[in-house]
Image 1 (tube, helix red, strand yellow):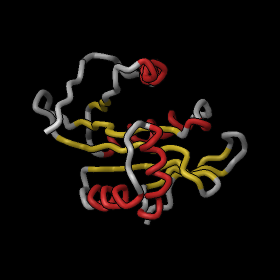
Image 2 (cartoon, rainbow, N blue to C red):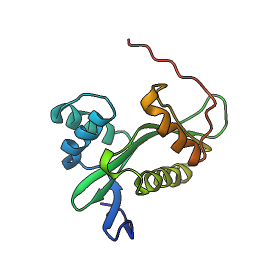
Image 3 (cartoon, rainbow, N blue to C red):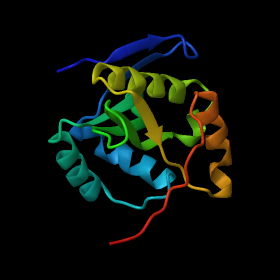
Length: 156
């Protein structure tokens, strides 16, 4: 199993970005709640099992002091509009009390590196148009993303 990427220097702590593991379900449940998606540990465990079976999906977590402070989940897929594939970030969050430390930037860089390894030409993400998402939109622009589209959502 991949041991992950180790970091030292974010406030002097030992930190690691690693692949999601089944034992992460409880903390990922809490992070999903911070994103506004109510779930429970059993549901999260089932989702994680399904995601881990699909090689086009990848989830990285930021672990520090045996706690998960952030995660980024994405999928790699083909594009209709381009010859190169793309990465689509589906979930991205840093725990509220840990923001501003560079965790999100490191997670996004790890996602971009994984995308490049897959041969992807672009990375994209959607973010809600709610007032509380404005700060996140500023951060995405800082990371180099451009707001070029409006997304639509419909339940089936």
